[in-house]
Image (cartoon, rainbow, N blue to C red; front, side):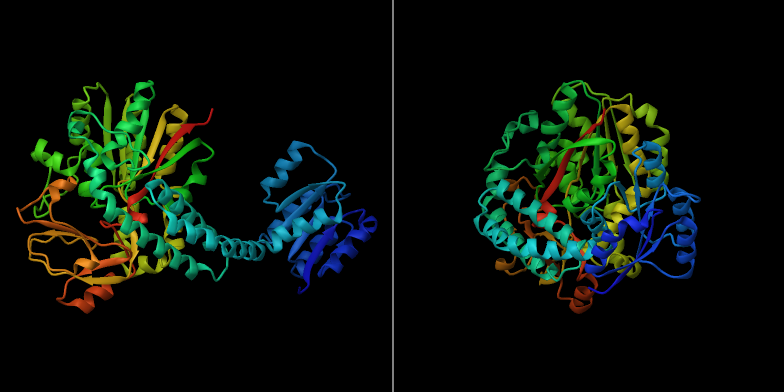
Length: 528
């Protein structure tokens, strides 16, 4: 270990020689002084990796010395040692961004532990993360091979996401290994969905349109049209006021990224549910808000359904769909619907919060993550800023922290209302083009296609030739849906190279993957 320079200021420094010798034996270079003024002189004349301050020194106290050190060298970590356990001293020390706070008497190992935590934490975290993942690799591989039902895939996906975030915060060379494992897991999930998806849809009873739904079990996950029945209605039945917040493209890793920002205000009940196909707003979100499969929306409320080949926006009738849901269930509910696309919309919602708090239910759609995904595709600058998944998560966290979203959740907590946070689908980074030929009426989505004249390789897609059996409307008698799996995206032969170059390494949705289909469904309860 190369020597780290440490300044130790204590009026009883002569009594700490055993501690000093111990640190030298561990490869550190401690410089000692017995008062605050000498400490400041040294800090002004040279750089230290870490400073240890005694709080109770004559002349300049430890707290006074700390304040001046932070003016001279604000980035240098400071460990404060004190005999006092008075809360106000602790508060002042913490308020001045100390690295650690130790109570006398301290032994050499306590000092060493605090030093390691502040000087070597990144290295130690990286080493531990790499070792732990290597040990876990075999178990994860077994989970991938042994996954038999949806709950197996839920557990597998949660583990993979947690490892992805842990390794991303550590400097290891395990990222590529984990990426390969995630690809294996997505491949296994793709095959699982192909085998079971039709049965999932068929197990949704035909009477669902009149308000009945079959409970999900080990054989079938909760699907998009069941979200309101299974999460919102039970809370309303208990007399709770509920905010249903849908954040577009809100993957599990993004939830885990913003979760710490909400921990001060809420406790969490965290679950996953499964999006229907296609994992796209027109289908999945409308299914959530209506409590129906897309084909039932088209049949029962044709004025609220927009076909793929129509120019009209595909998600303009969400409030009306929620209204139909309550009417079918014969429920009286005072509710509002708001879609927030920019900061002005967020600020307007905050101004109206007192009115919202009077409703039984408030449905709020936040679109920033979706806009970030599209901007990353279209803007070279945004693509550079969100070059990796970790950077993408960081941008999402920064938006949540600094936008009106965090303030909205804080106010909800103060009001005592429950919150359900979810999304309609996730998104996946794509990099493998698959050629598809379609006519001019074929939709533009890169992860699914629907049309009557599609040409493709059957082994490369999941095809649905009888859409009504899968809960999907058929724009034409011969309409076929095809879905991409893994990290594939559909590309047309015309101008193929340009198309592939433009869309490779972008975030897309509409197809089959853990990231797109297995999505967070979290109930937030305000802390008392």
